[in-house]
Image (cartoon, helix red, strand yellow):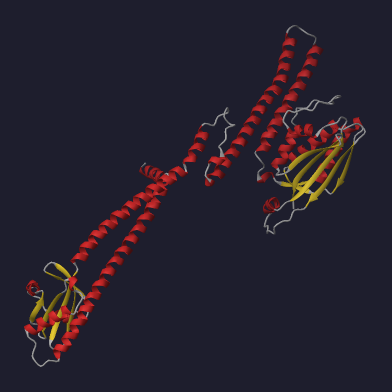
Length: 503
C-alpha cells in the first residue's frame, strides 16, 4: 500500500508542469539575476580599482618627493634630530601638491625611534605596539593597508641609511563612498530586475493572449457552430500557423460531420424502404387466409428484400473496414493478370446478353494489397461498366506502369521488402473504358463517388444500392492509391485506378 502511494505521488510529481507564463518568468528571472550580479561585481571592482590607482599615485608622488629630501639630508654631516626630521616633513609638504588629500607623515631614525610627525598629533594616535622597523621589514617599498585609531590608511615605508619615513593616506572617505555606492547600485539593479521581469511577464501574457481566443473557440465547439473560424490576420506571426491549423481542422471536422449527417440520413432512408416493404407485405398476408402458392410467392419477395438489406449492410461494413486502413498482415503480392482473367471469365456471361465484349491490353503487374478487397474493387468497376455500357460495345481494360525514381535500400526479409515497396513505390495504373448508351457530363460523373447516389437510367437491368463506386474509392484510398473518372465526348466513360506496384 505504501509503495502504491509513493508511486502515485511520484507520478503526480513527474507530470506536474508549471504554466508557460511562470516558466518563462522564472527562467528570465534567473538570467537577469545572474546578469545583474555579474554587472554588480564588475562595477564594484572597477570603482575599487579606480580609487586604489588614484591613492597609489598620490602616495607614490609624495614618497618620491620625500625620498629626494632624505637623500639630500643624508649628505649632511650632522646626525638626524627631531628638528631636522620636522624640517624634512615641512619641506616635503611645501614642494608637494597633495596637501588636499590629508597625507600623514611619520619620521623615525634608523633604529625605529619616532622623531616627528605631520600633523603633530598623529604620533600620539599610534598604538603602543606600533613599530616602523617591523613595517619596513614586512612591506619593503610596497604599499599596504593599515588601521590606526579606527581609521583606515593606505601607507608606504621608505628609508635610507639614517631615517625611516611612513607616508599614510586616509581612505575612510573612499570606504564610506563605496558603501553608499554599493547600496545605491544594489537598489538600482534590483529595480531594473523587477522592471525587466514585469515587462517580460506582461509581454508573455499579452503575446499568448490570442491563444485564449482559440481556447474559447474550442470550448464552444458544437454541431451548430462548426462554421466558426479564427481570424488569422489578428494573430501574431508566431501563432498564425497554429490558427491556420485550427481552421483547417475545423474545416475537416465540419466536412466530416456534414458527410456523417448525410450518411446517417441516407442509411435511414435506404433501410426504411425495404423494412416498410417487409412490414406492409407481412400485414397484407396476415390480413386474411391465403392459398399456399401466395405465401410461397410472398416469401420469395421478402427473400429478395432481405437480400437487398444484407447487401446494403455488407457494403456498409466494407466501407467501415476500409476507412480504418490496412494493417501489415493484409499486405500481400496480388497478381492482377490472373485476377482480371477470372473476373473477365465471370462477367463475360453477363455481358453476352447485351452483346458486350471485353478487351484486355497492356502489361499487368503485381501490386501490394489485400486480394479480396482488390477483387471487389475491380469487380464493382466491371459490373458498373456493363450496367452503363451501350449494347454492341467493347469494354477495354488497359494496364500500364509508371516508374518513380526510388532511393536505394537494403532489405532482409519479405516483410521489409513489402514495406520498402511502399516507401519507394512504382505506380500501377488500370484504365477501364466503355461507351455509354446515354450522354453523361463530367459533373454528373463526379457525383457517382457519393454514397447512395444513383444516376437515372432507362431500361435498368438491376437496382443497386448506390455504394459501388464509393466502395471502389474507399478501397483505393486504403491501398494508398487513387481513382478518377473521365468523360470524353459525353459518351466515353473511363475509370482510372492507380495502385502501388509490388517489387
